[in-house]
Length: 381
Image 1: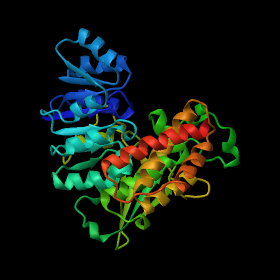
Image 2 (image 1 turned 90 degrees about the horizontal axis):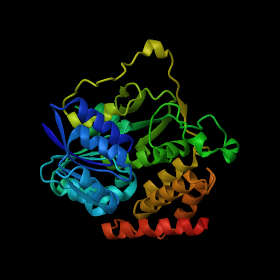
Image 3 (image 1 turned 90 degrees about the vertical axis):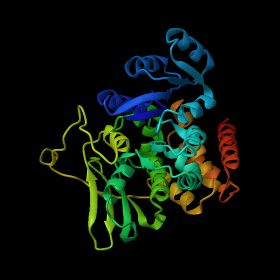
Image 4 (image 1 turned 45 degrees about the vertical axis):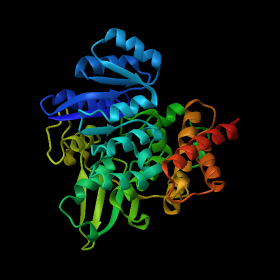
């Protein structure tokens, strides 16, 4: 029985994690979880999985829920995230929160030696060097939950990492993969949220449309697998059947395939090194699919991906600035305050004017993150 702490339970990844826990009660127990402002979903998780500790975003919601569920301990805010992550009765932390807010709680869990199943790419992008250093120091396993990184992880199982020639991340291309830059000038939020393959939250769906999501994944792959950026490629693959590939020196290529279902990599991270039946999962039928398509990435068309590569190769706080600028700009786009193409314009402007600090500590990272968000709002105003 693995006892689980879950950050971001009411988001897309968190909700699917809860589905897995519910389907395998003999294997997993949800002891503690955090949620944001979705109190209806929070209630449902409490009723289905009966945790000991729950953290929400606002103090008022914590007090209201305590009246409904007096036997459960409730907390709130950033301190609540840390409390969930460091619950003494859990051995696994699933980090499924959105954005860089999960950084402090993840580091706290690592220092307790917990296994980290990480779906929060922003934590690795903004502070990958700190996360991996602490994980090594405290012997805390880091298991990827992103479908691409899970595919790489699975394709490396039993192999010598020194014999890898390159990693190939596949990308669907997002909602606008067939549009030119000219056609992107007037796209709407509704258009952008209509992803052809995956069911994801709003922020990650917009990131997929700009391809910043893939840029963050390139940086994440560099951090997780200690791979130089020149050995990490991106390949457009619109069906999302091949989730990523690893090429070895002898020209062999090992890939992981499956239907687009985020529960597969989530469950693998939870059950590793074992595999469990995926309740309600759809079996892959290649004969039914018939054809798979692949295409090189045009970095002029997908400029956000190039910006991510540039930031990754530079290193330091420019990664934090890029990520914070993207988070702030995506939120402004979702609020219909800027256009779609302005997202990457804002990111580029922030990066060009950034005073970079190599190997920053946590305090510096948090300061750059906060200041960058303020700058983005000031730019738009």
